[in-house]
Length: 403
Image (cartoon, rainbow, N blue to C red; front, side, top):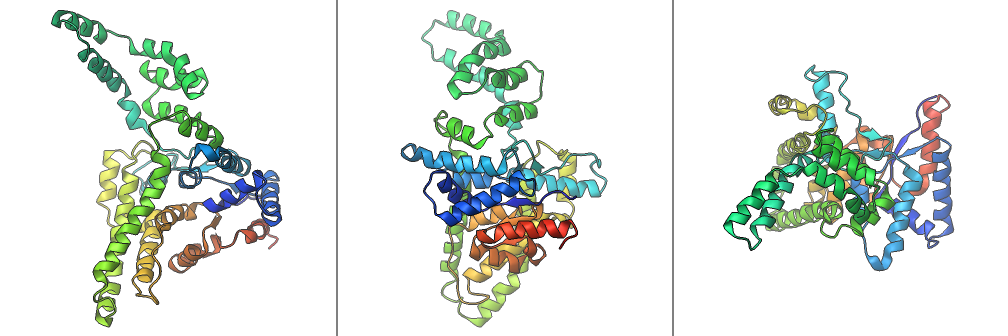
């Protein structure tokens, strides 16, 4: 008996299933949700969520809180604890795999992209490394603003330097936990443990984030208790807006002569060069995430000096195939000039997960583009949601010798 297929749903799929849970859907979609849920519960399918999906899905407006909560519940019902790595972590894992094949990293190095404990969030170990220093700097800044005599200020600063910050954090843990709706042991087991030197920053990051990684808890904490940071949801939409603006500008710049056959021929000839540039940019994305997988400075230098490496990294291959193909569409190099979509940036990030799952969902146009640009993965793409139950059954039958 083989493992069940790992399935990556489109953001809109979870949105539709959120409507089912709100009682605002149609009978066909409700039946489809039940069919997929039954396969998950029977152990015939694993649905895995990612940060790009959550970033698109969990947009928040207090007036429509139930809509967001039900979307989050739909993710929980289907995925349970299964999740795929944050995009830069995913690429970093692929680089580490290549380095294992070269003998630069030990074969025992863990490079798993799929986790059963909701590890969809970023590794922010660097921020935790700086946490003690930031606490001290914040205290000194506060003291500097007090209207005290020079002598008293010096004396106060002297005592502040002797302050036991882990004791302060331990005493503040109950208040911090109450403010963010977290168990006290989460704060004491992450921030306090870090300040006491009991754990490293990477483990502190993992412990703190894991407490809010459950989608409903994430909504309640991130949107309803944290007042200043909205970077995760905006990260994915900002990527899409950036691509959209650059593509619009590119087409406008080329408009005066793009209709000429000579210009089209020249632009087509430049696409392979663009593909290499996109692959290198993707490689650097992975190398920017150095908190895990053994990607220290020595390994990074080895990666950057290896011209063959991008061709071995799945994410690099996917990106370098998709972007030139999309440019060909929107510039009219491969047919009629196609519409530039705001969703393309998000679609591109979702495509990074294609090599790591068995069945993958996307919208109709992007799925068609992906089939043509990356034919090696075409059999994993399920274009319409209603076809997914049969695709799951077919995958299981084939994998178990019945197909």
